[in-house]
Every structure is written in C-alpha cells, then in structure tokens.
Length: 180
Image (cartoon, rainbow, N blue to C red; front, side):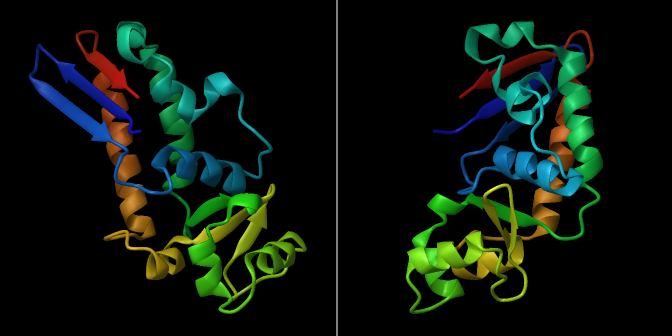
C-alpha cells in the first residue's frame, strides 16, 4: 500500500504531490524513528506524530485537515531531521531482514545475530540499538539492498519537500488530499 498526499492552491495554481510507495523502509517511519533516536524520546503523543498529521485526514476527511498542526509537527521533526549527520534505517529486532543479517555477518544465523544485537554488541562498527530497534546506517544498508540513490542527503531532500508541502498548505485557499 502507498500513501499519496497532494496540495493545490487554486488562487496561485501552485500544486505539489508526494508519494511514499518507492521506499521499502518507509519514509514516515524513518522520520519518526530518527526523531525518537536523536531526541532520545520514548514516544511522541499520537496527535503530535508525523504519521498522524500525514495520515489522519484521508479520503473524505481531507477537507478537514488541521493546517497549523500539520505545519507545526512537520517543522518540529524537521528541526531534528535536517540537523542529523548520520542517518539510520530502523528495524524492530524481531523483524530484522534476513538478507541484511546475512550481509552483516555471513554464515551467522539470524537468531544468533539478533541475540548478539540484543546484548548491545556492535557489528561492523556502525550499527546502533535503541528501544528494541536496530539502527543500520543508510549508506551501509544501501550496499545490500537496491535503493537507487540512497543516502542521508536523499532523505533530507524528501523532508525539505515535506516542509514545502506543509507551507503551501497554510494558505486559506489550499486544498489537501490524502489517500492511503
């Protein structure tokens, strides 16, 4: 399933669309996990989460989008995301992809790798662990999975686009649409 959001301003003709389909690890979840890790938070209240503001007003609820909240949440996350120097893909420990585990520790079983990571051991020097999730550096992960241009700059560019989207949405004439 994919998420499609769009905004248009009939008065200016400005339009913007965003789609999450092409990212196998989820752009929204990447941003959520990045905020939690970098800000050392346990959780974010649901109504203040990026997932909520992007998904809550879908289909027939799109006209009711809370524009100021959308911008506030997007900017809050952006303040953290755009300042990170090292990006990670985050995987729940019990769902760490077998194909990635194989590349990290060839010949080691996935269960042995999970056990090792659960104990806080570092493999290949860059993997981190936070709140029962394994953080694999984006660039390292891209070596094993075909992601096209996959580096932290790409994810920051996506987030800058999301900020621009939220800014366009603030005009009174702007029309929001979400399908998920």
